[in-house]
Length: 343
Image (cartoon, rainbow, N blue to C red):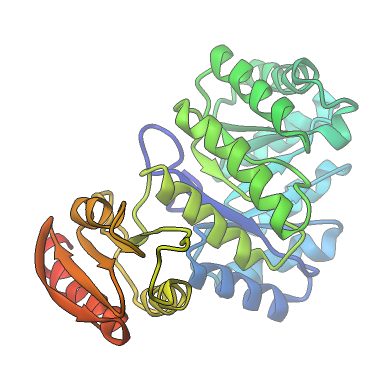
């Protein structure tokens, strides 16, 4: 358990992100956490670079509804201070905290507080991005924790290289049953970072590997949360609202499909859907008669467009003809009806 969030054991894959400001600035930290929470983030990690940051966690916790994880490097005493301040999980880096006597003190405090420790291995501090090196760093640290009688453990093995990350997680998943926090570290700016994270995290989740995820971007952390939700939704692991299926358009398309889809996405994103493990609602917005009718028929709600009009499908059946200007309005009307049935 990380606060009130279950990790592993068949629980839904949890979404994590991290604040960007000094944790000692409680007002800014809380503001960032609330933005992340509003976007759908379920666990937030904060940086703890000094005692001032660690002690600020107490005030942050009082004003936060989501569990808080402290990010600890170099100085184990910062972990002790963060635990005393009420943090919900401690992330330790085996690359810079490795002395058994120091780890033992953190274990003692974590056990007393009944909180987990994440063994957070990163290629940047492990000395190598080779999968075997990442796994070795993690298993060596885990061995110390186990010898100290501590098994409330979560593991991460992140490299900036997608292939190394995937291979490292596959190796560790064969060696132990501890929950795994997935991510491609330092994935880069938004566009390339989304691609790397989607491939790396998605590949592992398809293998049945992974219990929490973070999409690491050099961007607004809210974008990390949105990307994580889309990855989980695309894989059918979590339901955050309707899934829009739309064609890339070609010369056969006789409506302004790009504008329609953009308006539909904006309107749908403004609706607050209850989280559910049920299948998501699918909405097909298709531009022509080639694949349009088939996709629209397979979706919960579908429009197969012609010239200025489209055939409206609901649950596989044609309902009526709709004008292009009314596509979005009709989709929203049908969503409202289906929410009564499915949610």
